[in-house]
Image (cartoon, rainbow, N blue to C red; front, top):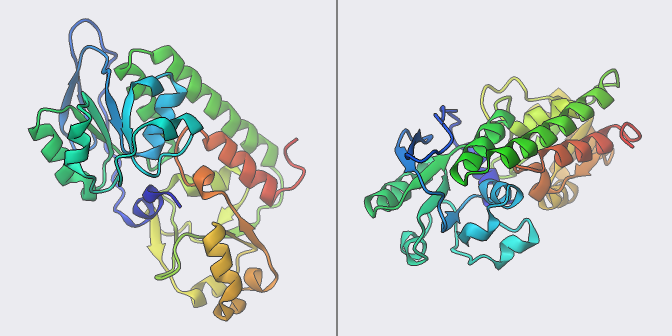
Amino acid sequence: MFFQSRAVVIAAFAVLSVACSAPARDAAQLSDDFGNPISIGVAPARIVSLSPATTEILFTIGGGSRLVGRSKYDLWPDSAQLVPNLGDGMSPNVEAVLGVKPDLVLLYASQDNRAAADRLRAAGVNTLSVRQDRIADFRRVTALLGAIIHDTARAKTVVDSVQHTLDSVRRATTGAPTPKIFWHIWDSPLITIGSVSFMNELVEIAGAKNVYADINGASGQISLEDVARRDPDFILAGPDGARQIKSDSRWQIVRAARDGKVIVVDTGLVARPSVRLGEAAVSLARALHPGSLR
């Protein structure tokens, strides 16, 4: 699972507003999800993106050629792997980032990154820290990045395309049986998704119900015994998680594990709140409702 996924599910999820107006001849004044101001006038030519989600967006809206640094987890599209790898995206190596002389750095707005954001800003580098925890966040961040690189039209096209696919999946699964799912995120301790997560939104769009949708947050630590009590019809897990479930006899108390109803998901697809959200919803719907999508 990419570096954000664990941070996304165990960090506190506060969705803060981003004030954004498209750049004109005068610098547009923006504020990020740490509440820090950022001034962008001329479109940045050298961008470091240390979040897979923002890296994917930039490549999709035509800003990939501006990237001079990425995190080691930014692997899509393939051309992203040609961008210099600057290491971790959480608590990044600030010296390595400064070494590529960026005029804009994009960070995920986790508390783990606040110190790095402060250091980069103190060094005179425009630094934009944003959260992408919900599908609505994908829409606003894409619009923001479109404004920053002066291509709001392409950004809107991307957002509209993703939303069209999500709407199509929701329509295709409306009226179908609604299976209960448990999403295995982390094993020790056992962590799953709650209601304040794009992953929960994807489950609902795909025509299923998260048995832990009552968790009022992005994630929560739960017990195996409680999973068995809630009795999901299917378990969603990444490849490593699926192997853990299969090899650990303790999971036999859960009916879905006992019956082999463990759906292996591509975490690089379904655990990133970015331009492939529509594709992620399609993949979940096809797994949960075979034949629902052609």
